[in-house]
Image (cartoon, rainbow, N blue to C red):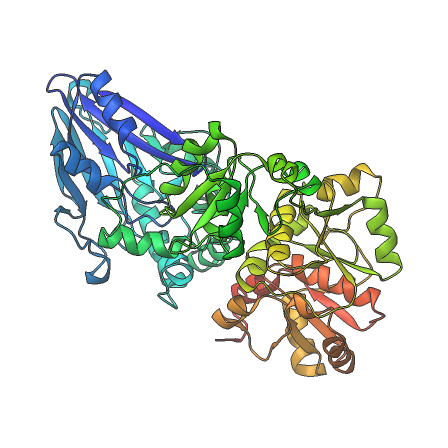
Amino acid sequence: MFFKQFYEPRLAQYSYMIGCSASGEALIVDPLRDIEPYLARAEAQRLRITHVTETHIHADYLSGAWGLAQATGAELLLSDEGGPDWLYAFPHTGLRDGDAFRVGNVEVRVLHTPGHTPEHLSFLVTDPLAGDDPAMILTGDFVFVGDVGRPDLLDLAAGVGGTSESMARRMFASLQRFRELPDHVLVWPGHGAGSACGKSLGATPASTVGYEKRTNWALQEEDEDAFVVKLLADQPAVPRYFRYMKLWNRSGEKADGRMIPPPRLSIQKLDVLRSDGVMLVDVRDKSAFADGHIPGSVNLPDNELFTTWAGWLLEPDAPFVLIAPDARIMELTRALYRIGLERVAGYFPDVHYWAQMGHELARMTQISAAELAEALADKEAVAIDVREPYELRQGFIPGAILIPSRQLIVRAQLPDTDRQLVFYCGRGDRSAIVASFLKARGFEDAATLREGVRGWQAAGLALEAPETDIGFEQVDVLEAYRRQVDEGWTLVDVRNAASYHRGHPAGARHVPLDAFVEADILRDLRSSQPLLLICNTRNMSAMAAEWLLEEGFDRLAVVQGGVISWQIHHLPWEK
């Protein structure tokens, strides 16, 4: 049996080729939209691609399954599980749980493993020439190295509301089948570290069933309710483009697209497009961008996160321009093509030429850690942490508030305050992207903290963390519930609106953390003391408590374990 794993680092995505040397046949699993690498590898191995399949309807990239089957004449085998809403809308050979097919001597058995999606399949592979036992399982987005697929994409990306909990329970059931597999079976997943399809994926490309049974957190949890709560907690933000991928991959609408190299623009044509409001995407690093860029540009560095961030910032039906060197254009265009961003109006290679021709360059304000510390002490600035809530446990700048980058991009709305807004993240990359995006949308006073949290620590300045004692009381959920019911404490849920509306502790008042800088909100909270602050775990509520302490509040407590612990203890809940 011939076996090959393909890896695309920008998507942290794995696809696979399984071949039979005796028959010359080959199977491709989970191909990307640009199919040339699979054709080239098959030719090099003297194999014919006779079968094409995928584990599920993907949300993070455009599938190449249909296009590859058309190009090679291969049989296209796709899931017919999951119900009518999740059937592929184009011709294929349907696969169901328990089915099997052969690629030469190699046998592939189909397992229906819902949880990440309703139609999800895994493929158990046996090479009879090497023995009767299965050799490997291709798990797609079911089981990763160290993690399992997130169950909330139907809610957050496909717009099918109220399915996160039920899908998490289906994941729990699917994992029971996984436990029954022999320990020696190799596990080849659909994604590695960096993918938004899970929250703690390992960086190694493969594992075994036995190793995952011993080390994967999801396979250690035997209580279904606790598993559901833990699986839904701390999932990464879902990039905006996911909602298009799911629909297009089901319908086949983008299956036969063709990558077209963008034209190099003259400075006159660039100026016309810029005047027409076309987004300019500058792929240089954050420091070069801050020192000088074409006005209205958004900074989107050319690194492994380029594709994901492009999916956040760009709309598939809106044209855009790449500000990038000639040598990088084809690779960047290919990365965008993989997620359906095809409307590249052109590219312009040299920002300095723009300036040499008499055009003005814009700059991004970057401030040092010492400057920010002084401005915070004088209440002249607000530090905006653009990371995800679970990252706060690594430590945050005292007096900062959390507005995740995804929220700033989708809403393009900032707190109503006369203080300077200084954005920061771990190393300064995300905050530079967000600040450039907001500046391009008209928020001229956006600034960034140079090198983010890392720069703050390098300057010898201390961070706060939810695990440390920073001057507020901490109570468990049972004590919090008693105070709410018996003593009339106000329970304040500081999560964002989407999280709150999906479910919250009964009687909790919703005041998102990003509203804490507004004077009328502070006045209202002051009159509502004593306060119980709650979030998903306790990261955001600790930040909220720190902010309120800075504002002179003295009657508050943070609920340890947050809504996760609240649900585990089956305390009153409402939606």
